[in-house]
Amino acid sequence: MTPDEPGAEEQLYSIAAVERDTGLSKDTLRVWERRYGFPQPGRDGAGDRSYPADQVERLRTIRRLMDAGHRPGRIVGLAPLELKALAGAEPPLVRPMAGHAPDGMAEQVLEGLRAVEQHDMYALRQMLGQSALRMGLVRFVTALVAPLTTAVGEAWMQGRIQVYEEHLYTECMTGVLRNAIAAVPAPSSEAAPRVLLTTLPQEAHGLGLLMAQALLALEGCHCLSLGPQTPIADIVLAAQAERTDIVALSFSPVMGAQAVHAGLKTLRAQLAPTVQIWAGGRGAARGVRGLAGVHALPSLADLHPQVLQWRAQHTTA
Image (tube, rainbow, N blue to C red):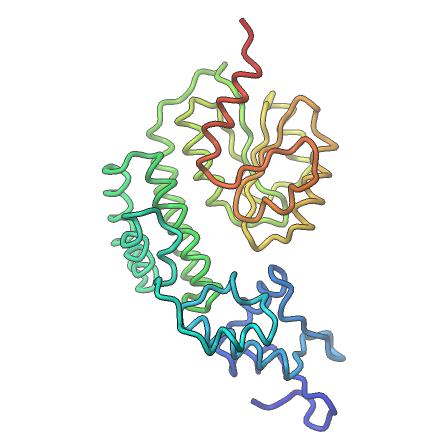
């Protein structure tokens, strides 16, 4: 790898050079920077990212550990000495990507991931359709769709699949989930709670919304989805127009905790006090801490008890 400034006291490397050297894509490096706070590149005279040699060496170690089966979420934030110690230890015995799935579902998650890697969307749709019929919608969403979506996201973070392959998966899964939602009997116009589903403008991932909508539809909720990336002012207007009881937001791990917290705080201040905010997804928990008036739902399984609690509080004899 050739440094950007051969004569400089400290060797600095462009993002393209780091990609060539480590095998980690530019997108992966940018996502890790936002999500984990590492790497921490400087900027050259043109404003482009530049990486010091010690960070590049650390990225090489991280890539070797990923190839041995370690998940990036567990190792990217480790100090250099911790990484070196881990690199000298035995690799994990559990296959990557399977650990997110409940017992008995790991093979199906891996089957779905292989279909994505092979661009076989027909096989993926067929497997998903058969699984939905066999498992029922609740278990299908919580035990298969959720861990498979996590596995695909981590495969992209590791550089095992490209952005376009993740988009192929998203389009396929979106169609499957929308068909499943359409098959659920529509609630009455007076069904409660009335739930508005969306994401904040910085959050582009919408599969979490569809998973939540499927489960809320089964609970008999009146759901209205705006899709992802709705400006806060428009969320407020829609909540008013639709007599919304709950605004449900989804957050992927890509959106940082500070951005989640700031967005939720702004939205909370503008919504009517009677409207609850439910924040779900893997990126929500840290951003909700210390924020009054917002309910964190760490997993899809939390939706059912939360709906029951809402109805118990809002049903009068």
